[in-house]
Length: 180
Image (tube, rainbow, N blue to C red; front, side, top):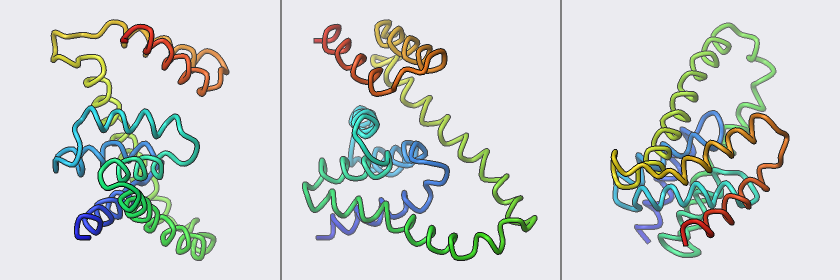
């Protein structure tokens, strides 16, 4: 039972500080779960991939996947409730007071101050995943097929209006062919 409470509070803290969208959760999961030994960096990257390709909010998917992997159904429930509770409470409070205070200079300044933090957290997550994906064996172990797939997917996302689901499916099939 104490493991489930620990997991709940870890994800409560992650949910409380995941400002700016679900991808910010990546660096927080790395900090909280990888550094504490709950999962390896590879498992965290797998969690990102699975959470991205499953329907629903990324952060909730990540919490559910992690909780289920660690402690089964009850772990999934504890992590999911933990990551959701701060958002629910904050959304209710913000909705109640937003229209009254959103034009205040202090609120506008605070929002401007949060943007670089969100950018930094997402960039940190990007670099962590890129390093683990492109250099799985250290600096001299560059993985060319992964790099080519990543550049191709990035280019297709930027240059076309292709649905990301097709890119995920195509990359999965290509990965199964190349790496099996």
